[in-house]
Image 1 (cartoon, rainbow, N blue to C red):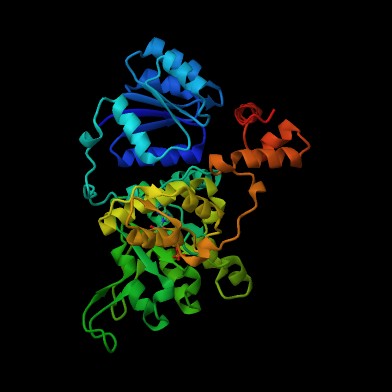
Image 2 (tube, rainbow, N blue to C red):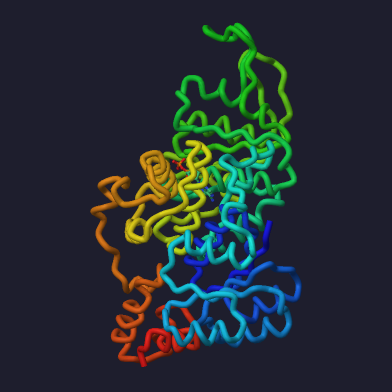
Length: 446
Ligand SMILES: Nc1ncnc2c1ncn2[C@@H]1O[C@H](COP(=O)(O)OP(=O)(O)OP(=O)(O)O)[C@@H](O)[C@H]1O
């Protein structure tokens, strides 16, 4: 497989391109600036450099000259938003293999890249189905995300995982609480031991004790066999209790006792079984309010909440959206045995503007459905559900760059908002002043 170094400072765009190239069997490293790219070039062998023309710390053409001096054998392809012949000629004169102007279509990229690598497109092997994942590697299903809120979340997961602390995970439905719990387990010292997930909302209160602690045959009507409870099944590993706020008061007392004594007694048995479990719980309700109202025991709350993690809503993980969309598309392709290559620009815009009340679960469902309905290479708007098509455009001054298309408009709006004060504008846009100047120059906003 060929190694590509991709240098592009538009994070969302570079992630999308990276995943697209990875799907076409290239190994891709991304750098957001020249400085980091130079360091990578010293460390790694690359078959191709694919670089943007305008970068926060310099010009792609200067970088091209530098590469031609130090790594003359590596073909360099430039990306530019400005389809100026003069730039292209200049780039080719300096030794660029080719240049490609944005927006470009995926076939064009593949063609330019395979030409540069002297590999005909037909030689690029795109297996229909991916290799089956090895068992026990479910952590690869966890996309870490690149947004600020994802970074905090991942930092918390890394910090708490190796400890034995009980973790209370909060967050709206579909944000990924169970996935976070599984990730903590896999990163913990118990990672190779059982992870037992229990949906407390789905257990009828009459059988909850038997579900948690097990029972002996004949201990009550219907107990036709011995049953091992969830605590015993999770022994040595992690017990994950989802929707923990749904436990009845009586079940809360039983749970607290089991946690304090680290022992359980199956119904109908006189023997206690010692259990060594780590407890992770999740809720999408305000458990503290339930404590105040007297619906949830305060002592249990504190036992569960040795460390708490809030999983952010999808609408607050704007920069991750394309990453997740791409992940769910890969998954849907695998599950439905399809090979849809990506999303149309309009679909990506709609995704960015929608508020995703059902969070990652909703995104996953929307993409699976669209993958099933799509007969072409790209998912287009007509296979999206109504609510997405009619979602209100979010205010551009949410100050996030989503795609290059709205970048210019956003910069103009923000500059107007702050009376042309570049320092304030850069702050609002969450970029450095230098990047702002580069972008203004690029869009001829001087
Ligand atoms: N970090 C992630 N990487 C990849 N997929 C994820 C991630 N987080 C969540 N998902 C996917 O999103 C969907 C919802 O996740 P999950 O069931 O963990 O949410 P939840 O918050 O526990 O939901 P609920 O509150 O309804 O129980 C699942 O399909 C899951 O695989």
